[in-house]
Length: 493
Image 1 (tube, rainbow, N blue to C red):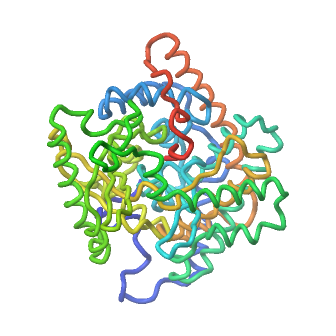
Image 2 (tube, helix red, strand yellow):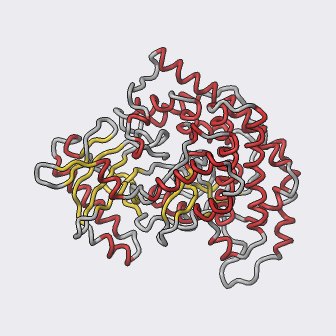
């Protein structure tokens, strides 16, 4: 268990406090991680934990109490569509499983939901296209392998949905785990600033891989990168808005997936005032130069929007603002509830869940959205809730998992593993992690074995959900799948 620490100091502490003397020798600190393998050998990491007394549906239903009742059936409908969709929405179920299995005790700042679709492209403030983790709703300090297990298991589930043979999946899983291990070892050899700045630039990576990708794969990756650059607020305006009677843009109505504020409450003006107050309070969490930039934009309209799979039912708003030159800025205000990991780990207590998300994101990402901030206050119904806010679209793009070949999924899994290891190196003791992982491939084999076994378990859980829908125990909303939205507005989160 992690020892409690201040919510203002996420993740494990550094080896020394600033100005309190030099840290221990690097080699010595790496050596100290190796004995952990005797306490928790890699074979133990491959174990799933007990199957008895599991009730995945009860866990999912326990989350419904804090979600919008009319959207809970949408969540179930999306989770039922495929084994991978179920896996995406079942972060709590997997956290419960991981909590009942041995763990290393080697903690870092976790993404908390590190499946394939929670990695992707986004534009940095320097206008470069980065590839990184892009969802932090569940971020929380915990055992490093929880993130690795979620990642490799998502590869196993997605590989099965894509019809990959066992030998192809095995190669993909081992490559992912090996990339994580080797990247952690490499990061342990770097200085602090080099670790902090480590990142992947998509276009640079593409140039380096051009020679090893076949022509169809290369064209597919280049198309994904090209589309990401076109996904900005102006693009969102063209896809999500129509011109109102007053000549001003209004967000379209596509219930239950997109619902303008005036359709959600009898007192639409109250909702609009609440939204303006939220933006005003959120402004204080930004750096002064970014406050200045935000002040150049004025509020126009807002709507509730359904995003992703696991998040469906939590409150999410999209807000349209416009600058003096009529240029649009779309922000997304997403409700932050306690991390699914928090009930299983002895970690910090956060009075503001949105600040937890933002703090975790800033720690794990090499660079973050300039408009990333948070707000806590009364929602339109008067209930105090936490929201984190960022741009809806700014060069954001995600891979199409469903159409990946085995070779492309192996490449993508390695990229995800690399940025995850870079994030873990920033947020934890990379020396101890590297010492534990070692230079052999036993860790890779253990993760591959775990992933295949967990994919079996997750498939059974998916079948259980589908039976519950067929039997009427659980209500799923037909026609609410992710592809009900235009392709450009489907969210990986």
